[in-house]
Length: 421
Image 1 (cartoon, rainbow, N blue to C red):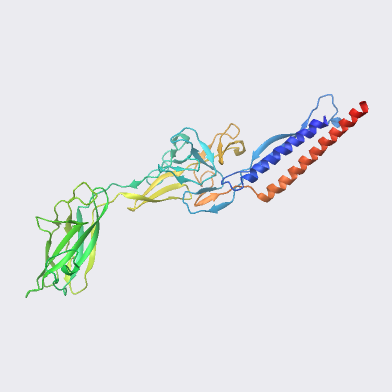
Image 2 (image 1 turned 45 degrees about the vertical axis):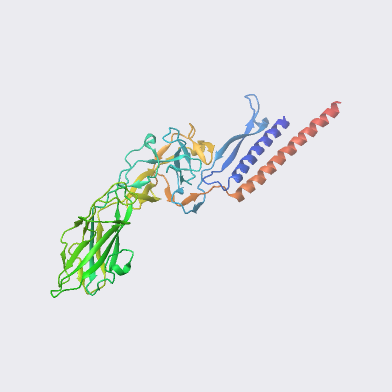
C-alpha cells in the first residue's frame, strides 16, 4: 500500500514541477498569468473504522489555479500598446465579425494590412460603437465591433476661389527683361505660392508672379501685371495670360475691383477641369514697404490622410488626419468574471469563458469596477523568478522524499520475499 502512496506523491510533485517550469518558461510572455498547483490528501475511511486508526492513501492534485495578480507595467512607443491597471480583460474575436469571443490581458495590438487593430495572432480587438462626441451608443456583447482605422476623412472639394492680398513696393523698378518668363527672375519683380486643391483633393501649387509695367505718372497712377500658374499650367482669362492691376497715387488698388475668373484648367494628376477665381480684394496696396502677403485664403479642402491614433484612459479611440479632422472610432470593451480562475487557457495569453468562470460582465475602463486603461504600456508576466525557483527547489525535495519512500517500500518488499524464500 505504501508503494502506491509514495507513487501518488511522486506524481503530485511532478505535476507541481511541470507547473513551475511552465511559469518560468513564460516569464517574458506579455499578459501571462502564472499558475499554482494545489494538493489534497486522500483518505480511505468507513463507518466501522476508528478515526484514530485511519491511514492516508497519498496525495492528489486538486487544481492548477491561475493567479491573476497584476503583472509589471512597462512603457512602449506605440499608442496601440494597451494595459489594464486593475481588473478586466480585452475582448478579441478570431474572425472579422465572428461570434466567438476570447479574452486576453496582452494588449500588444497592431494594425494589419486591412487597417484592423489585431493582436499578435490576428485576433480583432473589440470596441463599442460611439457617436461623434465619443458617447457609447450601443452595449452588449452582440453590439461590439472590430476596431478598424479609416484611411481618410472628409470629402474633397476643388478650390474655386483664391483670396490674395499683397503689398507691391512703390519703389520697385520696371524689370530689365520686358517679356515675362517665369524661369527668368529678371522678368518679374515678386512672386508668391498658394496651395490649392484639385477635384481629387490633391494639393496643387498656384504661383502668382507680379511684374511692374509702368512707373507712377503725374497723378501717381501706375500699373502692374499678375501672371498665375497651377503647377506648369498657365492660367488665362479671355485669352490673356495676365491680370492687369492699377494703383492710384495713394497706393490703393483701382483695378481689378472684383475677382478674376480664369479659364477652366485640369491640373496634373487630375482628370477633372476646375475653374479658379483670383481676388486681390481691397487690402492689396502699393506702398513704400517691401513686398509682403497681407492675407491668403482658398475655399478648397483636401481628403485627410490618417496620421495617428490615440486611446485615452477611458478607452476612447480617436484617429487624427492631415486635414485637421479627428474621429472617435469606438470605446475599448472590457470584461470581468465572477471567478477568473475558471477561465480555460487557450495559449498566447488568451482565455475562453466556461461554466466555472461564469458569464462575462462587460463594461469600459474606470466604470463599474473595471481598471484604468493605459496607452503606450504593456503588462508583462506576473511570474516572480525568485519565488518560482524557491518553489521549484521545494518541489524537487518533495519528489526526492517520495522517491526515497518508494525505494524504502521496495526494499521492505524484497526483504519479505527473501524471508518467504
